[in-house]
Amino acid sequence: MTARVITITSGKGGVGKTTATANIAVALASLGKKVVCVDADIGLRNLDVVMGLENRIVYDLVDVVEGRCKLRQAMVKDKRVADLYLLPAAQTRDKTAISPQDMVSLTGQLRADFEFILIDSPAGIEWGFRNALAPADEVIVVTNPEVSAVRDADRIIGLIEADPRRLPTSLLLNRIKPEMIRRGDMLSVNDVLEILSTRLLGVVPEDEHILISSNRGTPLALDSERTPAGDAFLNVARRLMGEKVPLIQLERKDGWFSRLTRIFGSSK
Amino acid sequence: MDDSITLKGIKQGLLVTMKPEGRWPDLTARLVAQIDAQSAFFRGARVALAVGPREVRRHELANLLKLLSARDVSVLAVLSEDAATIGSARKLGLKTSLTELELEPPDSSFEALAELPPPIDPEEHGTGGVLIKRTLRNGRVVRSDGHVVVLGDVNAGAVIVARGDVIVWGRLRGTVHAGAGGDESAVVCALNLAPTQLRIASYITISPDDSRRKARPEMALVRNGRIEAEAWEP
Ligand SMILES: Nc1ncnc2c1ncn2[C@@H]1O[C@H](COP(=O)(O)OP(=O)(O)OP(=O)(O)O)[C@@H](O)[C@H]1O
Ligand SMILES: [Mg+2]
Image 1 (cartoon, chains in turn purple, cyan):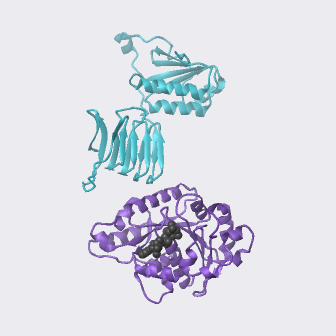
Image 2 (tube, chains in turn green, orange):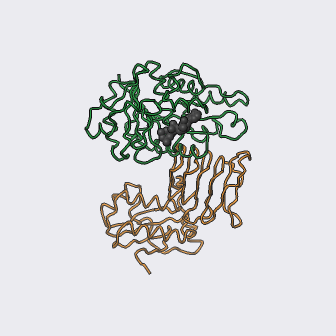
Image 3 (cartoon, chains in turn green, yellow):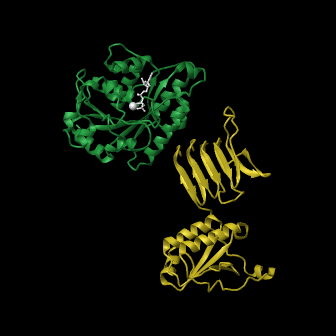
């Protein structure tokens, strides 16, 4: 086994990186994959809260890097699924407590035992982003249908493209509201793709179940109830596993969906 | 007056003599500045460079040739007493003596010109530039002493600064400055010309906010003392 290290990043804050990391991780684990999530947002950790694992944390990433515990001791197992672990961030330190090299060696130790290592990146383009990017094999850029979020996604993709490793990069468009697009109040999926010209990994609708599940610490794939966002994240997980899953049909009216599948199907 | 560079008319064009003292980069910068200051005089000029006993490496000479060709100045020969410099010039395909191009003052009479028609040169020399074969994203900057050609979009937040022209085979939404050295004949072309800000030489304009207008290839140029856009029929 050798894991794929996937960094989830965005540039702009609050667009849904942590939500996506937690939900994709749980979805992958529920599909039988061995998964570990790494919270690289040192000082502002909250992946543990969204995953509902906060109260089980003993050690964190910085403890491992500074030698206070073994890597395995810091990993929190999610007992609700077969093979899901969280490596939490330190809450009381800042981003400079770890280096890009630390992230590379840390994930290096995990690669042999997992299939997916998901890294939740902090917002911005500084130190924390560099830490999160250093060990990546692939990158998922999360954005919202909003001009400023798309600008920041463009900036981030530009930085990733300038990296000589040429990391495959895909786009996760979060918080889409079909009615607003229809009224012309929001950037449509095509508008966003036209600007970013990047492979689309998935479209996640605005869904109040997200808020409820985050507060409860129960990512959507753990819920027996089907939800629009839960289905979207499950499809993202399937696509990461190489399945060809069409995009959820959010809207049929003016035909943008057919264009969308064509773009999705032809790129890569 | 600075006399590190002297110019003299010869039959075949201009003899540029560069003093053996001083650093090469300073000297070449001075030459380029002098050409830029009198760009009309130098446009299309053919020059012989006399560098005296100075050692000029091949990449140094190649860089200068590039700077000159971006200004439409071509180099016929490099004259030097230094063996390494002569080697550099030969490797770049330049003549190293003017025995066949005697150093004579130009003859102003038409007869004399008619006697010696310029040799026919089948090579199209063109001018130098930078080619970018992907989308230029927010935060990326391209600078060129020549032209800039982008095969892809130029997104909002990207910046292009060129002494020459800017051609975008895609959407131009970023900030672009053509003719950045002051050349008002520079143009900006795009399949969809919607820059955040567009400058040519010292003129500045912003895109009218008419995003609903049908996109068509356009060329921006300076005309009647302002920047105008017209249909671009490449
Ligand atoms: N599809 C969605 N529908 C509704 N709410 C959402 C959706 N995605 C995210 N949210 C909400 O948006 C907020 C920000 O999400 P999240 O914390 O995942 O963003 P982030 O990118 O990790 O933020 P930061 O940059 O601060 O780390 C949260 O309150 C979350 O519940
Ligand atoms: Mg977060």
